[in-house]
Length: 442
Image (tube, rainbow, N blue to C red):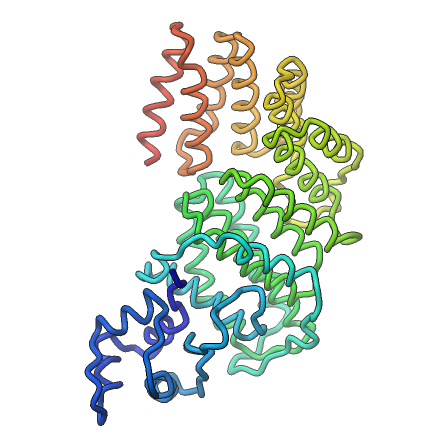
């Protein structure tokens, strides 16, 4: 099935028309009899009406929004089907804005967004890695954009990231998309020179990526994928190769969650190759640990150990890292390696790494501490140490109280299932508390 036509949906909303009112404008002076159902089908199914109607739509909407529109602008160019891998910059900005606008108003079109698969999911990574590049990203617009505006967008991203770490993606995503819609939208449509534009697109991409992280955490996977791919397009336009590698790491994380392990390797290798010399040490470590985990799930022990070794050979200096890689905190590598070794059946070594991760998490945010404790508890449980696992799992629940997060919920429920084989008082107490916490978070 085709993707929903978010561009048309956004333009009708910008024009201040209902679907029925818009259909009436199209019928005026013509023999057509379009109605709200016709417009809904054009948006929902990305259907293109026959004859001259697409040109009429351009004229009607151009007059309503006060600027000339092309068939591509309304999503009805038959030669281009919205492929995110081959989109001119201004069209890419319009598509991103249409997505966050629809997410903000909870439009039917956004609700029907589906996961991209196959070549459609890989082509944007190929386009990021390869020419042509955006030679000039300057833009003429009604509002002058300066360095102060760019700094405010960066600061907003940092603020929302801290909020996400405290309370999870479910309550944070609506706040991010509202800010994108009301504050960032006017900026990207404003006037700026090439240098300011690249800074603006880098900052905007950071916020779009965080919207994707929050959607992923809220189990809105198709929506998360769209945000992350739009962030990757902003990364290319900004000229910041390291940020593009970060976007690919996020896509690899999502692919890992969805069980597409070969896609994990593909994204991670593309990032390491395409951003070679520009990746921060923490991001390079994350990309190698992702591959180690993917190879472990495929059953490739040699591949897993090779990437574990590469990750451990990289030295991280937190003070030199960009804001986005703040998630690579002390103990993360050990946690990831514990998971790899657990998957490979080396439980003794897995516990050693997991214990090291817990010892190192003194300054780590609560979300990170919860994941480290969950990994240790799972290893302890698989080794038959039920009482130790239950005690560790209780510590995890202490840190996840009040979080609204799909991924945290998965860790809690997964650990409760893993310990269900042990019918002890401590395990029952953990499972009862876990069930209550999951219910409260839904």
